[in-house]
Image 1 (cartoon, rainbow, N blue to C red):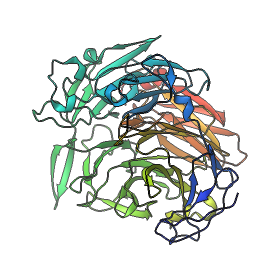
Image 2: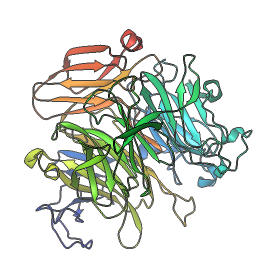
Image 3: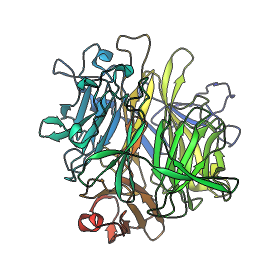
Image 4: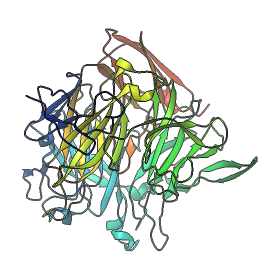
Length: 563
């Protein structure tokens, strides 16, 4: 197959086509590197590869055909909102939650939300469960009762803020999945928030205690705006405040670390200690990034902010082995910024900037080792266009170790895109190794389209396959925290990496919360895993074989009181 050239406004540049897909070229890298963006277009073909087969994707969207209202399995067409991966049945196969906002978005063809059980276990036989009904916006999997089976907490839209707090159709719903039923017990835990305009909820730990951040849209009557909730000793959630020390001109004061109108929360490591930090970000210029940096347990923490006027719709923590440090990644008007704490003043400083792939603002963002080479890759979801109609585009800053140097981080990445001309309205993405083959897969949700009979598009599921070795850590704790806040160190003969267990929650999405570790293509076959639980206890596993899923249950270690 011959390569073809395509003018996207940056000039004509040629690249080599793979055996699986015809390539066009569109580049924001063309003036930074000798080669331009490698672009794969999914039209009639269903597979595409990058870097001579080092990483390939196959379109398996037919795996998520859904049960319609007439009880028949059909291709879904319509608007989508929340997509989430979790484990509702205590096995090694991720389960998938999908919601469609309201049944009217599909003209009654589909129920509002689905739970697809073990879609990667069998590609031909799927089990479905209809979950909640209402004005669903998003949902998360979390094991609140510590039985190794995730419950599903759905946030409800609140009928545009006009709902009466007595209308149960506007309450958050917490579903306990048993057999073929979903029982709601949100009220029993105090998380129903009646009448709230729920958008997203993010779990995190502070001093070994579970918190929930409800990133609700504010209502005109002030009821249940953005708020934190903290689990008490009985397992019930109560409203709570977090505080930070803010310093200016040598004067410091304690003030609330409030959610305000921030649209997403990230939980991770950026300071030079083992205590997780919290970042809030939003796209308005007055927002930017706000961080709560905690040096140790029981400390109030310090307030840090990005420079004034910086728009940051997404901000995600990640460890970069090239830099040998943790950083926070955000997309701004300048490009993809890799940021860390400034040495002076409570501010963030930009270490390096990667050029943006495509000019459009991104709809979603994720960071993970997609090609299993030990370096995190940066994934963006964008809306593209062939000049006549919109399309869905995955833009990848894909790591490449051939010319990688710490002094120039852009040398470690090459720009790749995958475009889907038949999918007009991308909304969000969620990563999971849904078929447990060791490579992370990409699920794309569809947003709103106008005009159109169903006001939306369709799901896209891309199954990845790489040549690198890997480990997947399924960290659990029977205290209802899901092991969040646990730090896992993985050491092999040629690498040493550290990752924090988080909930995997993004904006209206949830990635597979299992820790995925790429180990490269070397012939090493054994690893040592040190798990540092939030209470200070440690679990050490030695001589662990690679290319497998390891379940680490803290049992007595993670349930002890905080040291």
